[in-house]
Length: 197
Image (tube, rainbow, N blue to C red):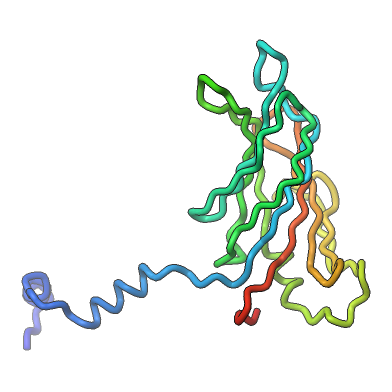
């Protein structure tokens, strides 16, 4: 057996056969995180979005959500600073402490799409409520209220509620890096069969 670290590392690096413990360690590091549930995000509407195209005095906005390496987007609403999307986007959740990033873009045919503001929101409040035993709760029960503070993007109180047998959260996000604009969302936790929270 070799006792000097430098010699050991030389022997390991020149070894032609795979070393089981090294292989297992690498595999576990690369294994994808398990999905613990899904977040259904209804992108309801935008309000008072900035005018991105100074020539036409309009915008063609759409919303992109990013969670980890996942990216989903809404439809494009033509020439509308107060768009009504009502699009439902679904994100598999692996880590409830990881925030979802939101960005509004103006679609351009001939140049890169312009950013119309950014925001982000947490999954934790919806996730924590989904872990509760709510089967005897009455419809419309308010589980939690989150208030707008300097560290979040909320444009008003956000309520997590029990509606129609589901945990939902209504929120308004104020867009940053722009002069104006907000986006209204409704989050819903979707349980994955076989996964206990």
